[in-house]
Picture 1 (tube, helix red, strand yellow):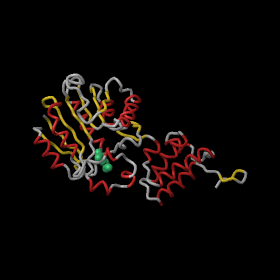
Picture 2 (cartoon, rainbow, N blue to C red; picture 1 turned 135 degrees about the vertical axis):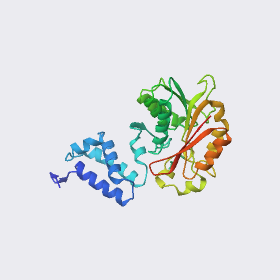
Picture 3 (cartoon, rainbow, N blue to C red; picture 1 turned 30 degrees about the vertical axis):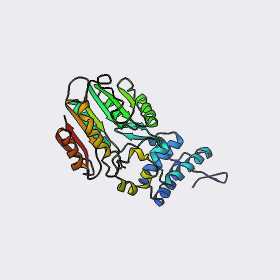
Picture 4 (spheres, rainbow, N blue to C red; picture 1 turned 135 degrees about the horizontal axis):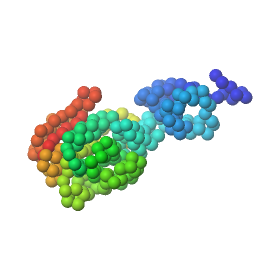
Length: 294
Ligand code: GLN
């Protein structure tokens, strides 16, 4: 241990060790990764710099800030909210309490979307419903320069975060954000003739599952972004009811789904007249994305 003038010095290495132990004791997810993210944030450093400055001493002011963040993380407040950002599809996405934190599973939907768009020539019209932080819209636009994206959300505060993400990634010319319920703010013929692709990660947690969510999700993330009604399928029903009006012939619908919802969602899309319905599994081998074509 290093002492200067009788005072204990908190080096990066020592701080990380203490945080990992504290998070471990509080059962915080991924203690090491969480500690690194928080410390880098408090110091305004890149994560890699922690390792290149392992023996650097941290000043009293930064320590005090860090202490507050560590305490909140110990109470299971998500690290992404504490640092105000997360990584999604190799992009830094800003987040806040008004929007859901982008999940790694949702990258699969983006991958499918980009794959599909790349097979088609020319400008592609894309609609992203329930955009939240705008992560899907931004990731599609960033990775497919021929995509013109309209993204909608009910929540104005979430859209303000989405707007920041669109701006940070330089996508203002190709991602338009509209406030309203699902398709409601889209003016057919004005915003786009019809869409080549409609994507959505809707709220899909059922009432029963909601009560059982991890507390870092249930106590901190917006209920509006998670709660899909009694059986979790409310929003899929409402999308199925109108998707035909907004898709081009042969246009595709891509939906993220929750555990055990594939068969019912498939049925809803079939009843809506969609064809070639496919279900894709995520890395945990759970059915996660449903795709259909008009
Ligand atoms: N995947 C999220 C969860 O695990 C749910 C996201 C959603 O409802 N779209 O909590």
